[in-house]
Length: 160
Ligand code: HEC
Image (tube, rainbow, N blue to C red):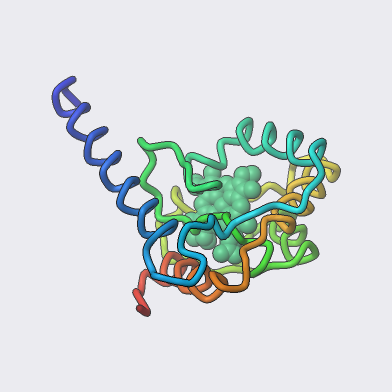
């Protein structure tokens, strides 16, 4: 890519992110319009260790968390904000431990974009990821929107 094209790509990615962020955080009028619906119940040590792991394993090349992802990556993976209200810790642990995660959650994407297996990570790290993502909750008033957005990413079909 030429430098000019690269900046255009970055600008477009920025605009897309802005639009998505806007849709997530202020899209549909609710009585709690101003409030961010996502929160974590993890203690500080868990949150910090998990965030380091998340960064180290490049999860954010594909996923968004706290509305943020790597702008150069456009894999349509589900956002992990609020995922702990959709999946419990046992499910997450099984998913992160699976040799073939697509046997648990089928993918519509090409192999290189699919969620990788983390079966080779030490058990303590798989447990930490499961505990942390189970703690990523969404407030009740935004649960349906979060579920719809997740289904849209998983199936590619917009149900709205
Ligand atoms: C190469 C891109 C990629 C990377 C890297 C990646 N994922 Fe995924 N992940 C996906 C995709 C795409 C899906 C949806 C299922 C599929 O298509 O395989 C998914 C699904 C998930 C799900 C289930 C979401 C749901 O809707 O139930 C969780 C949880 C998850 N990933 C967490 C992580 C964590 C934590 C990491 C880092 C340790 C990570 N992912 C790394 C692409 C990725």
